[in-house]
Length: 315
Image 1 (cartoon, helix red, strand yellow):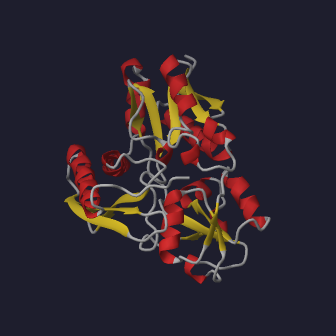
Image 2 (cartoon, rainbow, N blue to C red):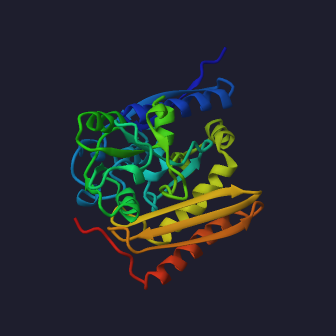
Image 3 (cartoon, rainbow, N blue to C red):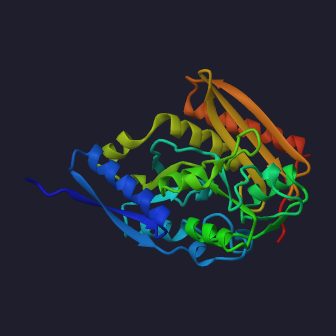
């Protein structure tokens, strides 16, 4: 029997990132009927080394992907595995996102140690820990009295900070909590209250497409989830049009409601007031190109509402 061909998978070294890479490895092995086997190659990214300051002070988006991108470019690994919300709108030359497995719960999860289950029910002047500009702005839009402090680090690190009393509450992505078996610690936040980051809950597989060959190319096409690719396409088009970075608070989500695609997007000022939002619909049969155009048009609508210039955090 022929030995399986190894596929080197680049990933960050956090427990969540390793879980996601191992998930992709399992899917590759299953989809190739054992012809391929995943080998995990962990990297420490610059983003992993920053534990306190905001990403906007350290380079913004790409901090969690650059080292893995270089490894893909150099042929050190065959594919890179990322959380899609960490991937910049502009990919490195020659790279493409070749597969998206099925999306997991895109909502934010609300965590406290006091049993409170909603941001709205926190006591006046409570401290919210988050390093996400989106979550900060959205929270202040609902509760302008809150004191927001930076809260960075791995999922486990932020949970420990909360337990130590460094904040009264924090948010974490439900997808990551579910993948780590920690979702019982959080209360899912209604999408009506807080719209998630574009791509939240989606794992992305990156590769240099001109180097891909069968059986890996065919295998990756098998694990690509059509509905998730549609969501990623529309949401990333929205970000790309607005030059989505870590300096502007924005959110977008494409969902299916009653058999129709519904796209929502929003941009907020640092204090959450005002915020600009828009939504659009498309037939479920809409092509990827047209979903991308929908995301672009929605972003332009919001930019027009904001008067052309988007609000940005400056520190």
